[in-house]
Image 1 (cartoon, helix red, strand yellow):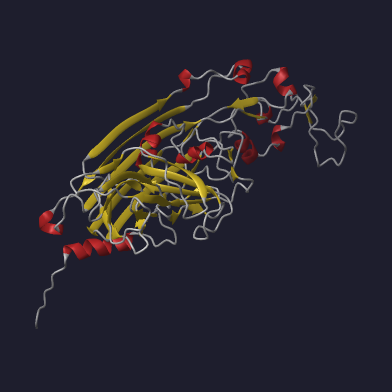
Image 2 (cartoon, rainbow, N blue to C red; image 1 turned 45 degrees about the vertical axis):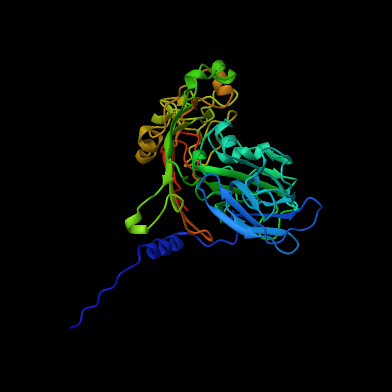
Length: 479
């Protein structure tokens, strides 16, 4: 028997794994940058070398101007770039440009000055580049802006309220997978918004209001929302196009750790609880996590340099007690659990001992009690031999009354409760960026969510106003 051996190229193996793990999507997060190079008299400069360098990862892309002086970089990742133009007989020109996700930016007309290569023209500040290549309009938040904006509940969807033409009626006090519905953009319906994560659809199409997976706000590099006149490549929804771009590692190692704490002890009780003598509702959040990212340098295996392979890892834990509104219901009293309704009151606070004995066939009312239960001459008391044991057992499952004043009965209840939901969550994300050449950009990203809410009042389809059986609604997310 002949044996055969083979050697797998590690670089090819990593490339194939990233391609397999990366979902195929119609949309991307890359943008484009274009411009025109001229001399001082406005004549086009052809053959000029244009280079853009990524500030975070040092990626370099080059292009040469055409006969009309125009250059185009059709696909660039969202980042801050240093644009450099070099041409024989002219001073080199440098300028800093910020490119957001899906932007189609024009650097305008750049007029080079005649001079030696040793001289330099550097633009350190200037007007914001206009998006003249497309008509779409929106807003983008990235970098330090994301770090410095206080977000209650740490949901990036809360940032939609910063854009014009948007009405957002959601409350993001509690972190979770919901919050995409009820965002109204330029009059469109609240269920007509599209959300992408790194260009991949992230909408639960079962209701158009939930996300399939979430990432920590500390793992977001850019948040962008398009509100009008966006191109046909987006499609699907007539409302907003919301784009979330995850963070990638850079040339230097960076990390962070954080803890956000909230406790009901710092809240004021509401007037209704004060009136009814109820304590403040449990409203406790403990959100803690960390991030780390940087270069991967393993020359013997991947033959990489510090500008070729990067990683970013984020993990956040959310320990939440979600408050519930006060619930008011009628529950069986101690006497009623024994079949004695002689002391039962109606919703007006008047006695109501009229329990009909169907075996008599006679009426049972305040004016005619012939068909009502009576035991030992007491109206409303059911004889013990007529009681059904399993039914009594069911009654005993209910909690006992805790609000039995006449005013409570007049309001239609004798039991009140306010039990907060337990809502622990976890958000994990890992991203790998690999730049094998200046022309190739490959990345893979994996998101894993633990998301399970336990409510004593049941779920949204099995709701109850009594704390009988807690129900856990688990919705894990992966992307």
